[in-house]
Image 1 (cartoon, one colour):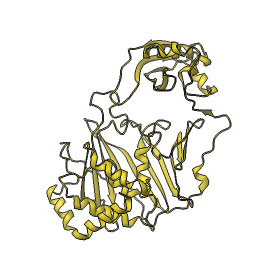
Image 2 (cartoon, helix red, strand yellow):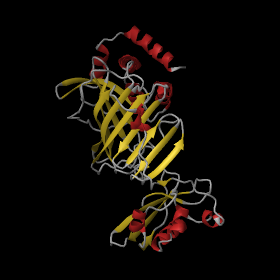
Image 3 (cartoon, one colour):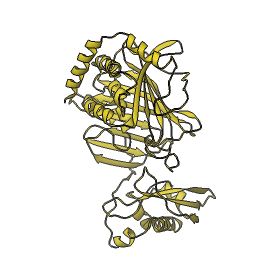
Image 4 (cartoon, one colour):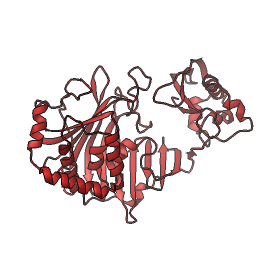
Length: 413
C-alpha cells in the first residue's frame, strides 16, 4: 500500500469518528487524570515533566514528515487506547505538514561528543545535537546531523561522516538511517518512509503507545507517549549504553489545535531513577537552508575508513582469539609499530596526534573476553598506562565480521 493510500484510509476513519475532544476525555478518565500513567507492561511510577522548550511556528512542515515519523516510530497501538484516537491524531498531523520543504531541529542528548549517534549515558552531561532536512528541486531529500565532534550527511544516494574533525567514512547508500542514526532520522523522515514506519509500529510487540491531554506550564498540549522495552537484559554490559538497550519512554508534544509537533523528550528508566536523556529544544519549519550546508568540509590530511584487506599472512590474524588480538593490538601500540597497529584497525593511516596518545603505552593488564546480547563482537577488559602517566581502564570492542575475517577494533579505546 502506498503512503497516500494509508493517508486516505486514516482520513476516512477520522471522518467517521469526527474530531471531538470526547475521545481525549475518554482516555483521560481511564488514566485517572494523571500526568503520565504507568504503561501496562512497565508498572513504573508516574513521571512528572515540569518543563518543555518550544518555538511558535508560522509555517508547517511537508516533505520531511516529522510528525508522522514521530507518531509511528517503533510503536504499536496500545489496546488500552482506542485505535481511532491515534488515527485521529495522525490524520490531523498529516494535514498539518502538507506544505513543508525543510526543517531544522535543535536538541540535546546525554552522550559523548564524538561517539556513536545512538550512544547514551544517563550519567553524562547533555551534548547539543542539530538536524536539518531539505527537499531539493530534483526530488531528493538531503539530511544532516551534527554533534560537536561527529557530523553526518545523507542524500539518498551516499552518506559522509566525519568523526573528530578528521576521520572520514563515505559509503554509497539509499538509507537515511546509516551509522546508527536511524532513531534521529525518523524525526526528519520523508513521506516514502510512512508505510514502513506504520508496518513496524504494528508488528513490534516491544512497544506500546497512549494519547492524552496534559497541561504543562499553563499550556494545554496533546501528548503521544511511547514506552519501549530494552533489547538486552538488566544485567547486560550494554544496558543503558545505547538507545535500543535502554528501557525508555518517548513523549511527543503536539499543539492540540493544529496537531503540529512542538517538542519531544525521552526518559530512560535506569531502575533507580527516571532520567531525561534526550530533548528537542527547538523546531523550525521551512527555514532557508543552502544546498552547500549538506556538503561537509573534508580536511586535506583526513584519515579515511578502510575495510580490512586479506593479508599475506591473514590466517595468523584470523585464527587469533579475542584476547590474543587485544594483546597483539596493545603490543603494537606499546612498540609504536604502526604497520602492525593498522592490521587491527579500519583506518587508512594513523593520525599523528593519536600516535602521541596511544604510542609507547605500558600494558598493565588484559582480562578475559566477554560478550553482550546487543553486540555481535567481543569485549576485552584492559588497563594501560600512557606516556603522560594517564591510566586507561576500559573494555576493548573487537569484531571479525569483515571480508578478511580478522579482528579489528570497534570501540572502547
